[in-house]
Image 1: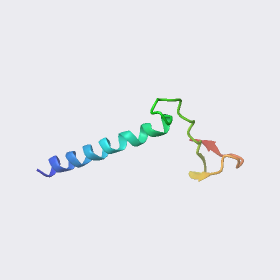
Image 2: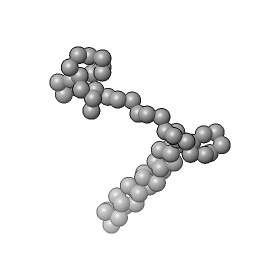
Image 3: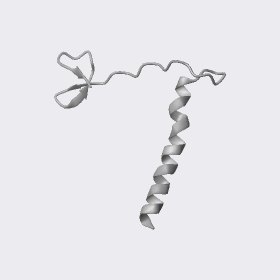
Image 4: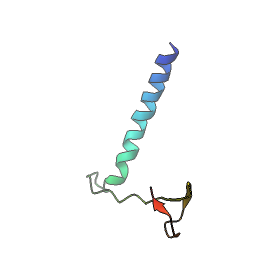
Length: 59
């Protein structure tokens, strides 16, 4: 019974997140457009750092 409740809850979260993912890739009329590029994150010594920092590598 517990696993059924957990599965139903997980399915509800996935179903509710789907429209939010597609929203940035639509124009005002609801037509799909090209999505903007995602910002690059960089790391230095295992921690997040500015990509302008010398030695930082993109993830």
